[in-house]
Image: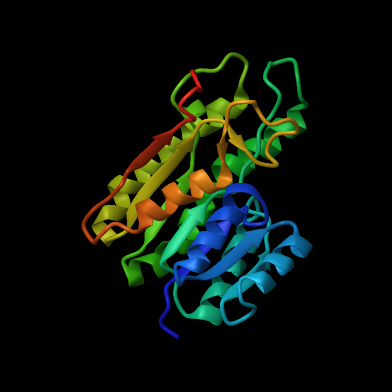
Length: 228
């Protein structure tokens, strides 16, 4: 099978799930990575089963698990054309809120997890002239009071630019998708003004649909009524 392969972390809900659905509809085989095995299995079955969708339970904070997930994808599908480092979560604003342990987990997921996803997929992407995407945030462009999450997304935006400058020599495109408020399980109570996960997934598919030689380096998007 020569159909292109789209690997997605944080694939069990929200932006990752929405992107998996659109990618599958566009003819990609999909490798779905997340910690929630039950949700992944259900989504993989819905998207075509083992021949079209692979569910790989994986903690993106663990290098060995990410490396094994990439190997499983290559064993099943033989190639990777797109790697979407999407896994992430947030924290309550305020330097006296949340626990240091929560911050540690968030920073590892949002920053380290994205970095090792890139590291693990580069050899396969170089072979296909592939594409790396990272989920950033509009919060990665402004300093939000008391937001350690915002700091992680500044790091994600910088990481994408660093990766672009290195990986262009390997024929790999790099895009950071930076949405404003999105109605996903990321929030306990979604902001009143928000994008949908499908809105962001369509932006992802726009970036990967460009002809060879065209790099969409960043998509910064907000609901039209969102101020920050």
